[in-house]
Length: 369
Image 1 (cartoon, rainbow, N blue to C red):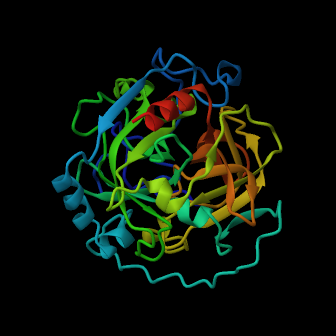
Image 2: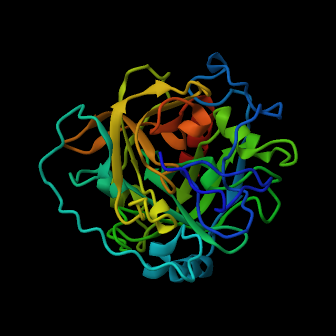
């Protein structure tokens, strides 16, 4: 796993950032990054005991919601903000001097990937539904720098629910503080080389566990993530003409079952650390795929992962069980949270927050909006 260098963006306590969701800036401090793990310091955060959860988050955590683009002028402003160049440079450490990355023109392969084929990281070229309902989630930090994560449209009653990592939406702190939540959220399903094949979607509202409301002086983002609360749900605004996002993109199933060691899982994401480090080839241009048997982290057994070399920008990406490589449809059972530096195990490993009771409450809230 390629670890971001120390001079990249930090979370608000100043701890060195080590996770694959690492995004841009020079000396600015961000509340959106999960870093060095310590024991959870809030009553709302579960211990690292996996028996305290059903695959992600204790049952006592409440939901904290936050409005997004609720008016037409705000939606228009955000649409105009995300130009092709800005999309390509989201996550750049110093975007003012970072070259716009070249397009990734890896040829598509219409042949389906053979089932249960291990993959430690490669451009997904096999088409299918996953290429339409997984995409890049763009946002702006409170300090004005742009970043990106990965998100997925999931089957829901309102056909508008999108799942990602909580740390892509906010950092620890008061939910009413200006610098807790990110801004300018913009989801581009099927993103490729700065284009929006299915359009771009603003976000109407969003939610995380209330465990993220912890005092940042006593609790790090990593504490909350390690306790199984790194799931965020978005409700996307409709496309022009009023079509809900799932009518445009299709959706992936979502599941909240207990993890099974050795289960074969496929992970997808848009890593982009190559914008900042020349030895990393990932610049966010195309969706990357990994696959393998999943296992719990040796240090944080609430997090489950597979061999995978994805880096910054992959956070929030889906980990899909029962994935059909012909149709490109599976069941989202987790979202990317971190790598082996936090959760332990052999490098490279990409770990997910597995979906449990806390994620189910967020999902039920989102599909009822």
